[in-house]
Length: 149
Image (cartoon, rainbow, N blue to C red; front, top):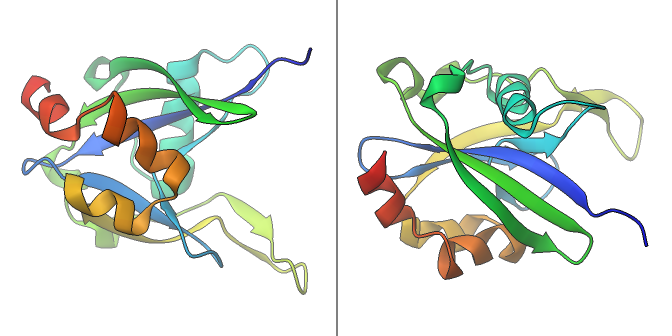
């Protein structure tokens, strides 16, 4: 049996309890900054690296709260960390994605994430995939999380 893939990500919350979502380029869905670890990389290090690559926000490890592992898809789990957004992170116009991938139809390298938004807990399902929305609806209340950060 092959090991399940683990994608590590940061649930960044603004002072109003909204979560940062990034738009996955050339798809219809929004996601939290996340990705797979490199060989031997600790989950929180992966989450912080993905945050930098997908938003340009460098978050200090001390700000992270480990939320644990969540079932994401049949073949993949999510290891999530939460952090409160700092004042400098509230203006999403400063976000840039340095992580590139080849566009399907012509191979041109384009940013993985192309837009950013703050989404209230009740808005997440409107933007994000069902796989991402599920943990927030079942075991991980964004409203409760906001109270603890």
